[in-house]
Length: 99
Image (cartoon, rainbow, N blue to C red):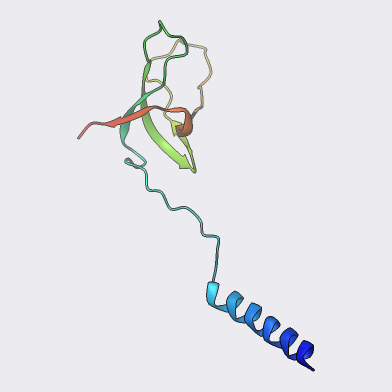
């Protein structure tokens, strides 16, 4: 008889704990310091110890998660196709936005 009550109390405790805990997984809503249409400077870490960190100017066209689509350069050679540049923000060391 004691064993049956122990099982019932244990099951009720597990159900109550599950109900009280709520959702355990939530999507991240990290906001970026810039929006579509703004121009930012992205600084990448140096690839070699003697190399300077390169700065890349990016006019933001689209944002998808950790990726930013930059507008193609205004000056390009005649006959060359448009280049679509998606930058991974996880590999960027510094994001600088002009006020």
